[in-house]
Image (cartoon, rainbow over all chains, first blue to last red):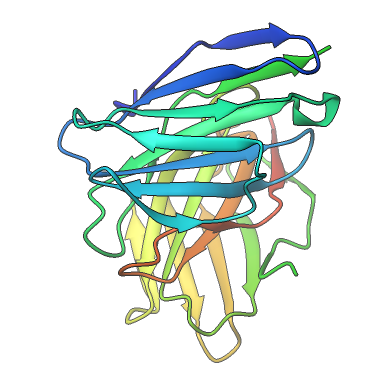
Length: 113
Length: 113
């Protein structure tokens, strides 16, 4: 158990809809990262938050947004969903003070029908 | 642009022998490297890491070697056990202020009993 929790575990929705994925980092970790893993591909970095502020952005679509709340949990919002958005979405957390190990949650499997 | 490459999509090794997984990178700004193990539909599990100031790091059966001049790292698992069967991802990080992980595409390791 990494200490990072993600909800929900599975999500099935239709094209055009909007969903919210939630992540709670390990106790004391200030940084939260979101990654996407599409079928049989590596993990692609989406976005990082550090202590409530956006710190780095990767290949995140404009239809996607995220935020980190004062209690440090984070939410990833995906809107106008397309079939190609079906993937595993992982959240990771770390102390955020420099090169540091990121610990991953179990992921949310999103299926867009 | 694949900055972290794992050129072997799969590897089979007899139980008890050594497993060697390889990873190459192109970005000389990377200064922290990690190996993760991943089972299907689960989050990546951190295995071992190495800073660019070292050339070797050992943790039990796992050893990571870094050759900065060749921009190459490898993960050695000895002895290999059936529970080691999983997909292994190499990841690289640029360090302070830019901590997103860049992942390789993974190597599926199968340990043959």
